[in-house]
Length: 122
Image (cartoon, rainbow, N blue to C red):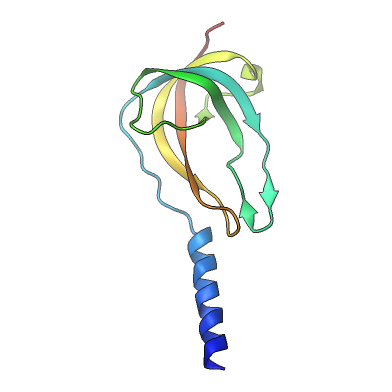
């Protein structure tokens, strides 16, 4: 009986640890990045969120303020809407790190930029 209770407590602790919100790390620089705007629909997998949903940049290059770690995509919030989809844009704003994942998927860290200025490049 004691082993079963211990297993339940451990499992509950793991679930709480996997679904808790991690504090974001805000940077004070105003980097500038250029890339193609895409949109990720909210996706659910058994156990929780897989990736964040929202606008993100692919095929990007840093103009200034490149972080030490290279990310596969950069999420964009702020002054962005569907009129920018599939267009190459230059975004300037503050960055922060966001964490996504669930019980059955590993937590991953993504870069998010709070857009203060967006301009179409092409």
